[in-house]
Image (tube, rainbow, N blue to C red; front, side, top):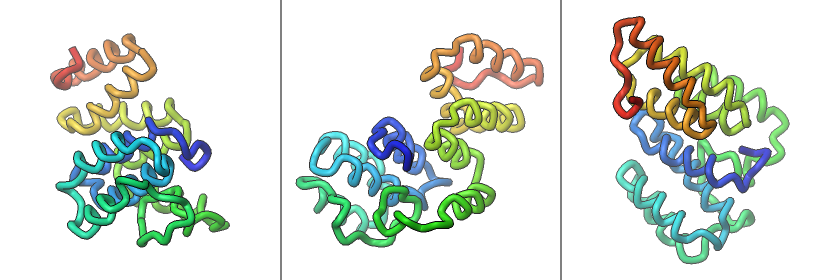
Length: 179
């Protein structure tokens, strides 16, 4: 993500995933990154993502973003503390950022680790992590959905078929929407 700060697909994915209950503590930072990446552009996308995430945001945070909808955010704007943001200028230049990221990844769940891998461009690593997690917990809808998104993004229909077969070998049903 920090390598390609304008990757709107990755930003959007982070917001949508962070809008899920186990990751909602990262939602403000993910939305902040979208607003910073787009600046005054992409109002419709910013508004849609904010509307989608609003129920998981603190009312003051919602108000902050609503005030920024018209003009967007500039990197030199004075910003509130934003855990989970990778574009917040306050964290740029931290020499131990990579080390902090590794410690943070060790403390977070599988979905957030996969998001981090995707942000770093490691599609294969994210796929392997999610495949293992899904095999361990075939009823986890969030993991199944993210893995299916990866398969669709990479147009890997054979991987979908292989994963369904592996799940069925374990006696588990294919996740909803996979077949």
